[in-house]
Length: 208
Ligand code: AMP
Image 1 (spheres, protein in one colour):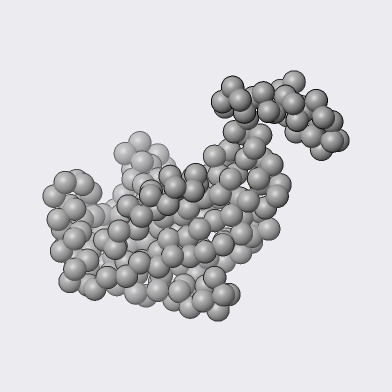
Image 2 (cartoon, protein in one colour):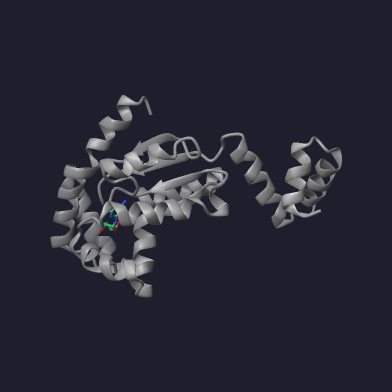
């Protein structure tokens, strides 16, 4: 009985499928995890937690901690874009100079990339989005898929500008990130204030 068959049989309340699933769980079989995630999804557990805040506020570090604590998929759009740049994909070629200058990658491209990522198996049990949404159209794109992936909570990290700049410059010494420079930080802070900060109100109004 493969995973698909087990799920079909579970739907028909076939007790043999439960026994098979329990055996897979006991054997710590990867298939068990996939089936359980599908069940969680069916019960509305593919929720999203968003994490936002200015550059250097520590979003990435905290997102990783939360992901491992609650067994969520950690999705960092910044990491994904840097990977595209490294791999010289079409998206990477468009994104490179924008990343370096601290500007945002166009909404349609990031939204497409994110939606594709959410369709992967490991997101079924819930995801933490690190660095998305960053604009109103991006937040609205999540509204469109909210029946499948409801945004349950948005966490906002804050710190003052001087502290952020200091922290990013320090990080730049080890991260090797081409956007951890003084010029880029200035732009990233402006972009955050203009495009991303309004999202706090957007989610507050929704009671999230
Ligand atoms: P981060 O690693 O989150 O600081 O993101 C680094 C850079 O990737 C940003 O300055 C943007 O150029 C780009 N980026 C990451 N996430 C997004 C997003 N949601 N929308 C547009 N651009 C993004």
